[in-house]
Image (cartoon, rainbow, N blue to C red):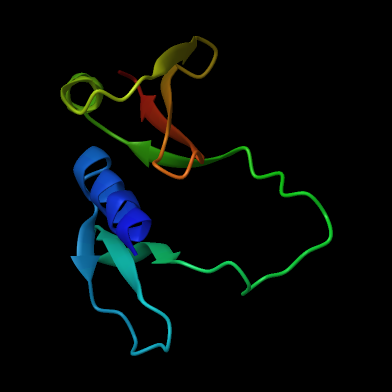
Length: 111
């Protein structure tokens, strides 16, 4: 469960999500909240969704605010990231990886 705790720490520190109530499931995990709503559900499982197809999740995306603070948090935590700006939509995107290697995209409108 150490990796699960690392992933929880990543999302609470980087995206400033908060631990919140979670139903009493048989598997350990966390529900992380933003704005009072459950946004990210974390569980550790190797056999919950077996598949004979390769996994292809590239990344998940969040709309957030506070570009400078976000970048500072990543740098303090030693997390590598890249930045892309989409002028047509006036959006700055910051890409990084969580402790499991999942891609995380943070979108900042008008920043």
